[in-house]
Image 1 (tube, rainbow, N blue to C red):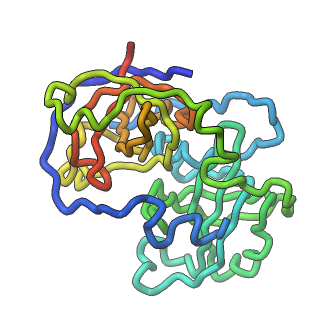
Image 2 (image 1 turned 45 degrees about the vertical axis):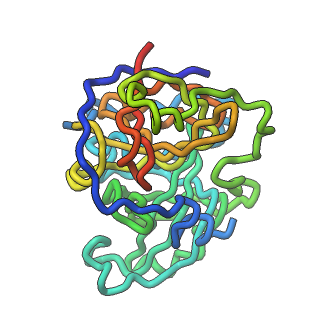
Length: 289
């Protein structure tokens, strides 16, 4: 499947203090913990899928449309749950004065899955054991990011139904595909030696798509992002000789498209910068045909 969207003009900013750790090596990652102007006219419709039982809310939507979803109540259909932990005094401000305990949860929906930082008050903390795989948990969105591992912060409201272990999340990329079955695209290494590659439009054959993250003014100043970028994700682009990491960014009008980019997709991208992205990766932006 080829995905495309309109791109605006790019400009490159200098970057500083980039982190060189790979995403899977960062302490506190989901795998370690579980062991296993905004577009705000109206909420994004979640397209119907074959599995209509996954009627929970796609937590990634609060990051691409925060103006729509903040302070609303939604259902998290729990597909993974971390440990319950006390909120440290140093973190109290981000969780609000009512927050006393927290846990990471992964919420399943027909359109995909996303992590959230679930917060309990002193009163609701006794119900934390009900938040298990398969449970339907009603939550209120408090922040689009800034929680544990920069997850959206949601507040526990109530448990609508207890868990069904059959809903367990398969892992960050689901069942691995046969490498030979994946398509191939442009070799991003060529951008390191060919100055003309910067600004060109190429194809990225996605072999990995990370979480959608929000950007702020500090991100724009410290990294080589195009002006006005709202969201980013870490991806790997497969080519004939291997795979290359990259930092894919989205303007506000592009943000909903980020929900539908996954392993096996072939997307058209503009090479914004050969370095300067997250983890000092090349910076890419989605473009139209």
